[in-house]
Amino acid sequence: MDRRTFLDFLGKGIAMTALSPSILAANNSFFDSFQGIAPSDEDELKLAKGLSYDVLIKWEDPISKKDTFGFNNDYTAFLPFDPAKPDDGILWVNHEYVDPMFVSNYVGGDEKTKEQVQQEQYNVGGSILRIKKTAKGKWKVQKNDPINKRITGQTEIPFNWPHPIADKKVAMGTLANCSGGITPWGTILTCEENYDMFYGERNFKDGSLIEKRAFLGWHKHFDNPPEHYGWVVEVDPHTGAAKKQVALGRCAHECATVKELPDGRVVVYSGDDSVNECLYKFISSKPGSLSEGKLYVANVRLGLWASLDYEESPILQKKFKDQTEVLIRLREAAKLVGGTGLDRPEDIEIDPITGHVLVSLTNNTGTKNYYGSILKIVETDNDHTSLTFKPDKYLAGGVETGFACPDNMAFDTAGNLWFTSDMSGSLMHKEPYKEFKNNGLFLVPRSGPKAGQVMQIASAPSDAEMTGPFFSPDGKTLFLSVQHPGEYSKNLEELTSHWPDGGNSLPRSSVVTISGETLEAIQGM
Image: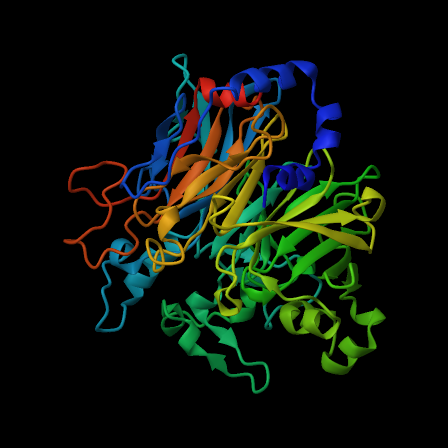
């Protein structure tokens, strides 16, 4: 796919008229000489020239007198207390899953103890941190600030739904927290993705538990129903109050991207991160509501959003007893009404210039789509409530385009597209991924002489992936998670990574802040 196709994909014509002349001039000048980096297989976080990073916080760092930072940090979101003062605010960070060897010292053999499971439960969920930029321009966590707290696999979280879920109105904890989103009213949406590894899944034909999928074995000490997980969880970052938003459905949610409508209602896009699973859209019926409205699934072949409303669908009424069951068994319901199975739909972002919806499709090795792609959804009349759309283009990964397995995305203040890659550690450095080496962070400039080119900006440490890119309001800082370095270590004596502390230290997932003259120049500052 050539440079011109990339520009067409992003919508160059609209961008050229929407961006200010100063941004265009700055980009033209800067990109004359700027080069990205080559792929790397080194155990370090490598950045393009003019960029530097600081480790903001890493696994097990204390955040208060009683709490520590969790494991495998993923999605990040920064909310300033005052938009006019972007250097002081709240950072939310997801914690997706655990590696028992590191977290609970479990290496197989005997069954885990209850105490080991509890240690693992504590290390998932999310962290709420107050962070400030110092006089020297470095971001620091304000330790012991009253804002700082943890949401874990042990936190009681109610369901925001009029009916019980698996006979209960409250779930024990949140887990598998992958990507997320922010609501217009300033709460965080954290998404429960691969929930089945913790408590298994239900065989809905006979009601039995599919234990083989619960390889972390938490179900052996805690009899929590699988139906309590796989939801989008809304969290108030100021108080830590949380609720599971049942109306958004249950699946391996990667993200929940929110678009506010002029009348105050919202549209929420979410992907089900598994092969041959679907893309969803919730349209609220009342302003500021995530519980009142309708959920739809994308039929990409026909370009339409199919309703998952029980009252509107005879086929759903034939299969399920009510709307609650439809939402719990969302994957089955989606296929019944014509939802299109996709190649691992992960992150979703709305282009701030065109309004188009971009969906990263990471890969599908079963169909020999090893490199993945980015799908562009153009809603009819650019109306996010429309029930028809055009699946306009795919931005395909591969050796020719310089990236593989796109995952999390973000747009900067100039409308440039940034995205991370998610090559599996078990396949990294092997064909067909050998040429890409470690996972990376990539940029597609929107203007200037290199507009439309994919440029690698960062390379992750060994075994790691970079996740959750999020720009500060002024665009001068990129918050980024470095997740699971050293994940494929055989044991604690044969570690594949020692990032970020070096030497013989344990590898630790960390959140970093990236800044520098290059970041500002890219955005025309």
